[in-house]
Length: 373
Length: 247
Image (cartoon, rainbow over all chains, first blue to last red):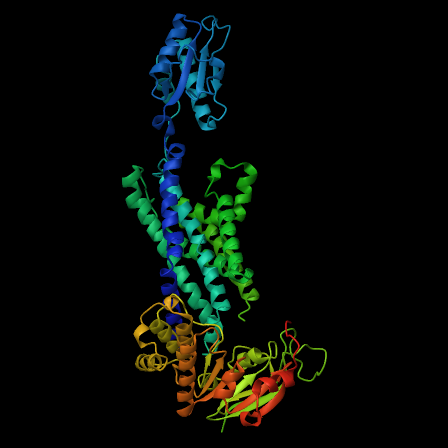
């Protein structure tokens, strides 16, 4: 009898959820759209950006000496640089204001004699990563010209070589956005889940269930299982989209890593954490408005802290420490362990333990707070 | 045999009921007793806050932690045999709006532990009884208020209870649906079902019920035959006063 009641409650919850178009949009289409657009947005940040984007640069060769001309020629022929010719009437002091260039290189008189250095000016909004790259390029080219070296990269390659460890690859933005927004969407399940709990209580159907002697634990389980299953479906769908469809549309590769099976325990634990969060919200909120606000704000805050909106490595040191209080951080890092680091399960296990503790804490607090009537 | 026997019930929402104490606790019901003979239609009347809803929730097993005892057809609440021998149509439309009438009936049929065959057969019966056969496969969010209220009743009847509890069954319905509900109640009673009707509509109680319990402040102010009362509304106001009950 109990098993039949449980199955029926699960079926009912699934039907109620799948007939709600807003829930479907929130749980499936929102994260797919986020993965698509955020991948496009981050493409330049994560990919080998130096070769994908040309930096608009203006050269002012005041020296016109042979070495200055050679340096100008080397800069002009570099693939990373797009030379911008300024119209004669343009005010050079307002060069960045016009938005035509992001870097100004001045080769001053006295460069040949070594009395004045090459000057580099950056657009104030220029990305720090690009600044470092331009500075490094200018250093290399200037050293080549001054020291009379033909190709400094050929010299350096004998001293330093860049390798990847254990088949690791340069991260594709998809490999970061797919787990990030899949987790984010999984945590958003707290909204329909808590609304479902509260509606059942407020609309009297819960009371009606008690008139049939249905056990509270069967009701609770019957309401949690469907959302847990939907969470897993969400992740599988996002992964399918990220691995097979998005690469075709936005020409960005996705590699699963060498330990794909680790995704199963990770997803099972993450789904437990998200459903735990949903149940907790359901017991904290008293009105439908409160459930939406608490669940959405909670998910967004945990997402921001956990490195979903702003990648973790960009964050300040303090924020990187703070991120560790967000379960989304641990979930994201667990997936990145699989997709990027090819980590052993023993590396992922402590992160899963933290997520499991979060899930248990949520269920425990919810269990203490729940007032069925 | 008594269809319902409520014996010395005390209940407070604010603190656990001390069975030995008599004061200091704000009681929703206090030493409340009543009974209904099998086959009767009994009215439960009282102003807002009188304790009617609390009593209904106790009888249906929704509220626990009360002092006293409730028996349904000799079975003590909240035993399964007692719970399953009563049907309840709450005042709120306690149904799943995104489901069809048939899906709602199937769901509550399983909750009442009916077999698949029983659910199918009883669904046909109660849909016909409540005039919803032609709308069985429509989502009930598309139903009118009267149709939803009739389905609320149909669900209560699905498992063929011996005692039916109706809490304001005609609130917000048009005269046609109201009349249909009255006719259904009469037919159910004629077939032997005991009905406890909680209502604020005096005309409804006078028309349908043979006995009445008038409740105020968690206590009985009248319990007897409807035939003993000439004008129910006047009697109600005399017994419970004319002051507004806004608390």
